[in-house]
Every structure is written in structure tokens, then in C-alpha cells.
Image (cartoon, rainbow, N blue to C red; front, top):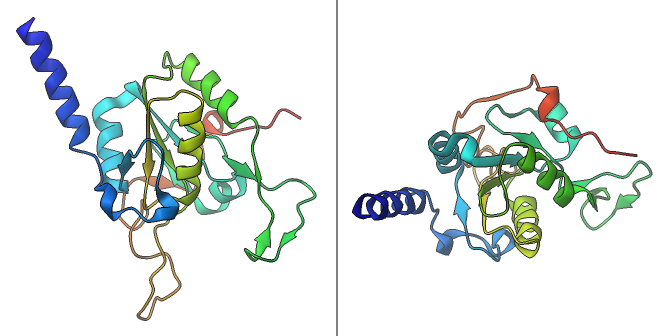
Length: 194
């Protein structure tokens, strides 16, 4: 019994060691669960938990196609996607994005196929942590209990000053030199069911 309790305490302390300081998380990136990782912590946690954690890139299919994707993610399941007839969004200066109604069901299918469920660790990454936080909130509403969001995302935050002001060079997966590739694994990609 003492060995089981010690192992449980060790596993809880290891996971909490990866928790990004919630006080540093911008309001737009806050989640209901309050579970945050930076890119380096996400990489370390996935390395530690392996198949016991499911790592999802929630960016659009176009983003992963043209910008690349972390090599250790288990799947790309877009939280939002551009509809075929997407109108222009003047407020945000881009084509409109709609929530992917298949996001929750597709994640459940893939996790189930991997022997995982709603009580297992899920790690979400997007471009900069905004969409992954919204996706994390949806998953919390669906009953997932350990959903982490990568607060600095794949490309990182925008530099506010200096010669690279306006560019995503502050932090993030790519800027931390973590493993990623333009070459995509088809089995990890999302194909809508039209």
C-alpha cells in the first residue's frame, strides 16, 4: 500500500512540475480547467507520459499544411476551420472561421482507438494559445478532466517592440527549437466527413 501511495504522489508531483504559472496566462488564454503548459513543458510532459497522453494540434488544415506541425502530436483535429464559402471577417482581417462541430466526436474516436478516455491527459496546441484555450473549454464542458493548453502555441506570441515587432518570435514550439516538420503524417491528419 505504501508503494502504491508513493507512486501516486510521485506521478502527481511530476505532472504538477509541468504546470505553467497560471498567473502569467493572458485573459484570452485562460481556461476553465486552469491547466497550462509552455511549449517546452508540453514536449517534456508528452515525452514523460508517452501514449498515456494525447497531444492534439487544433490549428486549421491549411495552417499545418503550410506552416508545419510538431512531430510528436498524435493528431491534427481543427477546432475551427474555414468553410468553403467563407466570407471576409472585417473585424479580424481574415476569412471567417467556424467551429468544427466534429472536433469533440473526432477526438473521442481517436482517443478511444488509442485506449484513452476523458480522464486521461490531453494536450492542445494552436498557433499562439488562443484557440487551444477555447478548445480546452469545450472539452471541459464535454467531461474531459485533464486538458492542458500550450499557452505559447506553435508559432509563439508577437513581439511588441524591436526590429521584429509584429512577428511571432517571442516564444512557442518553433522558437524553442522543438521537433517539428513540414512533412506531415497522413494518419495524424483530419479529413472532414462531408
